[in-house]
Image 1 (cartoon, each protein chain N blue to C red):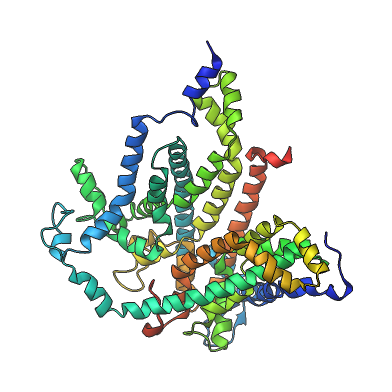
Image 2 (cartoon, each protein chain N blue to C red; image 1 turned 120 degrees about the vertical axis):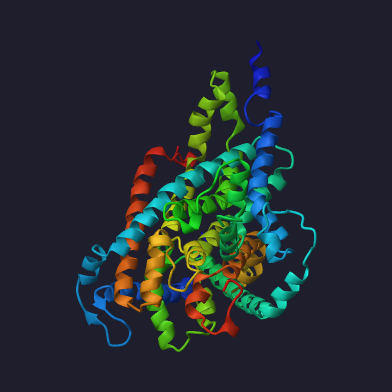
Length: 301
Length: 236
């Protein structure tokens, strides 16, 4: 390590000062403020009044909140596993020494870097029951498609389908991980008589498990914060109708947004934000704990 | 049987892919591209064409004026300019602040460094919704709602993910460079500026790309902070 000079004792602190100031002003301060706000009732017209745990009590009796919680869980439970499988499938296909690899990779990756608002508006058309691409395609196959975003039952699955279109980011991570699997391991397993399925389960999967873990974790955290699609795609008919038919796409962050920035119920919305944070925190810790059993790190051996 | 012969034939790497693979990839590519193709085709048709049964991928008449209308009816260029302005400033702020902080966390020794770095990383897990309300109130009190400050200023105070990314890269640069420069009388800032930054160009470009895409496509920030139509960004 570099010898330290006496006059330089503070240099390190000066270098990290931007982050330290930003942490205090934009993260730690607002966090404390948000926690305090969650124990108050405040509509910004009069000063906040302390109500203790009332916001949290009301939250769990609020049918709209419970609905948004269920909607979000439903969305995460479908989109994260399906998205991971699709991304892994695409990565496996691309890992076969295909010609034109970069073309296919770009095609699959493109949607994931396209502006989410533009994507949402595009898929609004795709899901149009009468003229949309999806139902036209289904009609060509002789199937009459559902009303998608206008139907209470199909609005969430529609958003899941749309999310599958954006798996390119995970696919790139998986592809990089697959290309990092040493060839010798496959050869050794093959010499021992392992078929391609067994090699996939016992060689490939453990070797790419850190990438899988990372992708699942990020998918979970991102999934719980789903907002823009629902806001753009299910609220355009009339302002304030965000949330879709019978609130089928009212997700937690969408409900939080409506409470905070349309109804100006800042205390209630802060309580909601902390419930969301708590859920994400617990799930992350649980995943880390479970991950210790199945994630395999080369460096640890 | 010669076992070595098998290895070259079967398995993923080394084997020649079958036509079925290309069929699968081609089919999937069409699925992934069709929404884009539809958009492209619809963008040069009139309403009757878009609502036609069945949809015509190649229309009889092309309405190129759709594109002219987008740029004339909406203040398209104004929104693009606003977005570009914000993006350039955010990019500048992110690159300067994150590289400085990453330099501190990777190449300088100070008390509490590891603890502070762990703290920095742990804030990555925090969903933005937790801090958005107090931040909004803070910016409102400063009179900054409907200005670009809330969108730009935070970028000058580092972002944990990019700090982490740059720190990991800085750690791979040998410390002998620093030592030699110190012996020659260079200051720490000089080392950061003249040695580390030029060597870390690939990592800095990565950060710049991520920041550019993220800022250009940001929806939630402008949605909350910007009200005036003439200050709006493209995603609005």
